[in-house]
Image 1 (tube, rainbow, N blue to C red):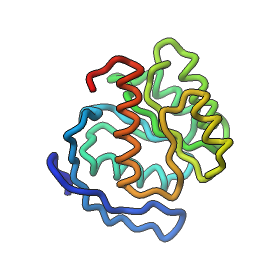
Image 2: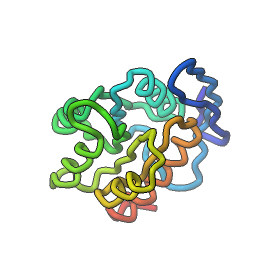
Image 3: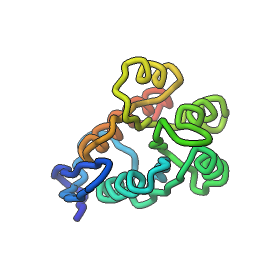
Image 4: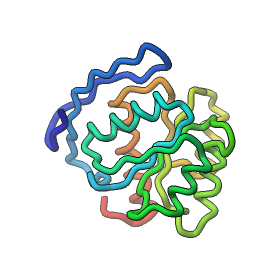
Length: 168
């Protein structure tokens, strides 16, 4: 399974007939979230949540939690101890959408610097532009591979480190 040195990531997350073929190794010569960072995965589709959680765990992250919607995610953020250090959220969900969750996070003093990756099935430029303007650190198109997720997490760390004056 996962190791802390060298390697690559192979897997694809799709809507149906999903397969997991993880060959994951966490290869970091660059700064990255610590493996103890709490990551919150938010998606109304249980299969997508499960695959994203598994990909994060196989990348070496030990504390990955999940929420089926933005309301539950907000509750987790407010109560989480240790605090959530990265949110990966779907855009389109019933109730509180991912973009509405992002707005709440950016407006709240405690969470305004929280790294946020938005998942979307829409490759429309307007949506991506909106997400970035509202404060998303990154976006990831569905379907995505575990390697895509790793790359977006690394890019997100760099952006958040710059914004929050973390070590980089």
